[in-house]
Amino acid sequence: SGDVTYQAGTFANTHAITSNSGNVLLQADSMTLSTSVNIAAPAGSVTLTPQTDNRLIDLGTETVNKLSLTAAELNRVSATTLRIGALSGSNTGHIDITAPLSPSLTPTLALRTGGSVSSSTTRSITETNLGVQAGGTINLAASNVISGNLALNSPASTLTFNQTSGSFTPATVDGISA
Image 1: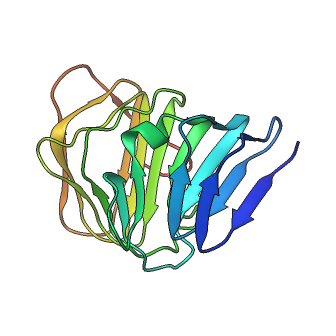
Image 2 (image 1 turned 60 degrees about the vertical axis):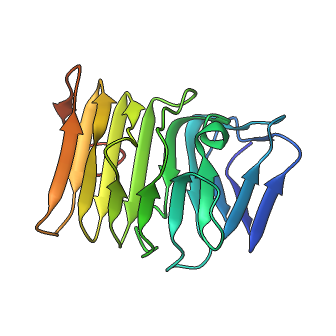
């Protein structure tokens, strides 16, 4: 137990990765989360972040030359918090949401980048708690459904969030202030 860290250019798991009492950090420019195994930190967080700071992140679609994680891959992560991007926000690549996301094994999703975070009107996020820390704009214009706490933090002048059903509470999420 304790913290588990993996850092390399490419990550592909064929065995379960679990930290029963700590956190899991996977840092790679390319990741494949196998269909047969999970990544778990039942008492902590799982952080998936690029190894190269300016690497773009695609959540929803496999895209060449980006850290790409599909919705199905994100559903293989079990933790109190699923973090995409470095905790420090040092990664500067934009985060693009290219398919609907609804992480099923974690109640909190935190997106962190020094760049921007965006989705189109059909690429929604459904989650209990959502935190977004961006150095650029935040544009989450889809029909999002957040049922717990929501924190959107950016020094940029443009911040867009659309919620179509339910209600959320503006509050700090994973250290991201609302």
